[in-house]
Image 1 (cartoon, one colour):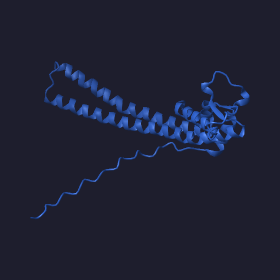
Image 2 (spheres, rainbow, N blue to C red; image 1 turned 30 degrees about the horizontal axis):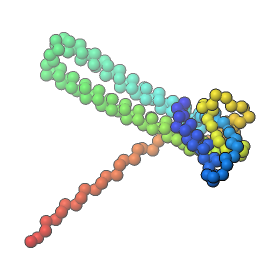
Image 3 (cartoon, rainbow, N blue to C red; image 1 turned 90 degrees about the horizontal axis):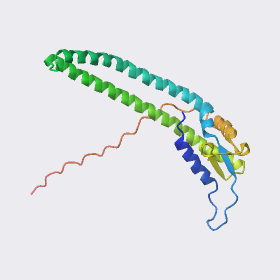
Image 4 (cartoon, one colour; image 1 turned 135 degrees about the vertical axis):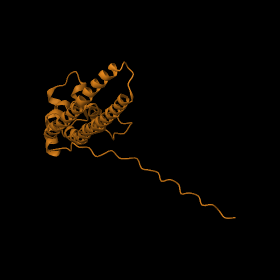
Length: 205
C-alpha cells in the first residue's frame, strides 16, 4: 500500500493550517518544522499492516478469478481459430453461431472482471481514506505538542535532522486511536432518479 500521494498532499495542507489564525499585518513568527515519515507510518501501523494483508488476499482472489475465466476462454478461442482456418475463413452457420456465443461469453467474463476490479480499487481507496482521515489530526496534535507550526512529509525533503522527526510519536498515537479499518468499501451511491412529470390532463371546453 505504497500509493500515498493524496495523503502527502493532505498532510501538507494540514501543516499549512497549523499556523493559521495570525493576522495578515502581523509579522510572521519563526517557524518550527516537524517531519513525518509517511511511508513508515503507512507501512507499519497496526491497522495498515492488517488492512494490507486483507487487500493482498482480495488482490489474489481477483487474479485467481481472471485465471479461472481466462484459461477456458483461451482454449475455446484456439479451437474456434482452428475450425475457422479449416473452413478457409468461411464459417458455416453452425460455426458462426459458435463464434457469436463465444464472443458473448468473452464479453460477459470481461464485464465481471471489470466489476470485481473496480470493487477492489474502491476498497483500496477506502482503506487509504480511513487512515488519512485519522492520521492528519494525529500529525497536527503531535506537531503542536512539540511546538511546531509546520509538518512536512519526509519524502519531500533532502535532509532533516532526527530531532525534528515525529514519526514514531505519530505511529504510536495512530495505533492507539486507529486499531483497525474496514477493508470493504460501501457500495457506490446510485444517482437519484428524477421522477417523470405527471401527464397533463386535457382541459374541457
